Length: 196
Image (cartoon, rainbow, N blue to C red; front, side, top):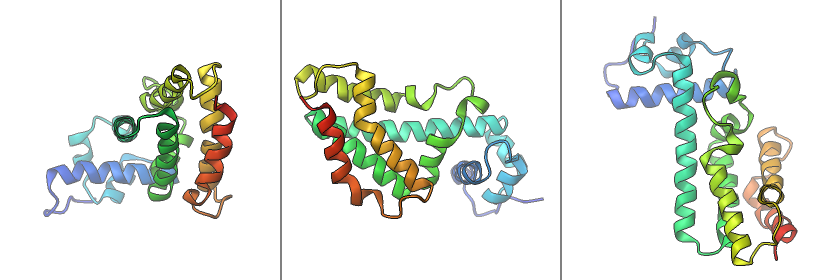
């Protein structure tokens, strides 16, 4: 049975459990990962996991909410730093591409995990706060005249759909080049489709 190393601080234990869960849920899947698997990967005791979380679903919920919060914070910073819908949307796409390169497991978990199967009370990713914020950028662009008037879901899908497909191609190993290398071309095609 794994024991939690003595030199690990309490705050680090929680972080280690979440990091291990992300890796295991991404590589094995939620249903093929057990609490003892998470304990081994995090190098903590099973009891430590139950000290911080009620069960595996609670770990998954914390992970999902943490990832969504991080994404939302990045988008809030973009909204604060950029003045136009064009610049906000471009920065959001660049941020998603960069996140894919720097934290593949996070993007994989956000895009591929069937969250409703194990987190039925959580909103689907496409209706989560970060994706609402991205739709808000598009809506604001329509109101300012930067983006043609159309259904906001259609416009958002046109603008970000190709980028999301590029992300999944990169995660699947179909696209060998880093996503930032394609940023300008993807952005130009996406923006032309909706620009006023």
